[in-house]
Length: 175
Image (cartoon, rainbow, N blue to C red; front, top):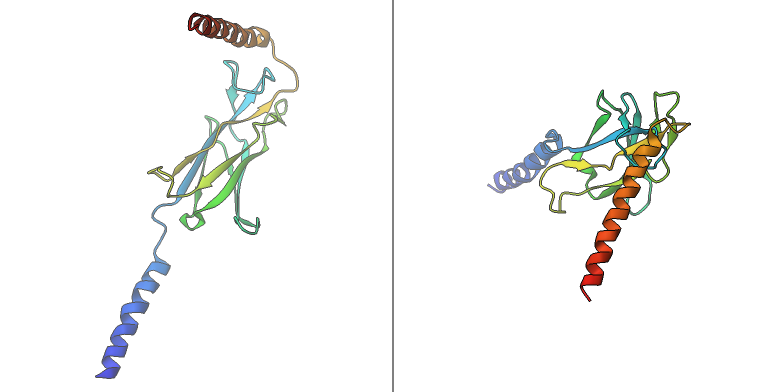
């Protein structure tokens, strides 16, 4: 009788643990982003921006305590400049970095400072209901400023001046 109870308890504890250990990942994270070429060397996306097919991106995740790299995966962008990297759900609570590795465009290979690497936090307890994690768009710059770029950049400056004038007028009228 004691042997039956002991066997029952072992089966009750061990079988669920074995099933949990061998079950496939049902909810992997999907890290998504896009890679662009900045022909204006503006440091951000403009109307002249083109998205790069075949750019290489690296996702690396580090352990929070030791800072050791625990996950690393490369991806290439599709024809729209977008990439997706599926990450095992076991990597929760890690801080990952998505960064640019290479561009297939011979005249657009210089990574844009401040737009070449971004953090991605893999966590299911942050209010995001899906497994999708979005990375800011990352960019490369052309070696030379393309024609038509000064006009594109001046549009942003004009918009900025207009919005500053409106905000200034509002703040003066508030007094």
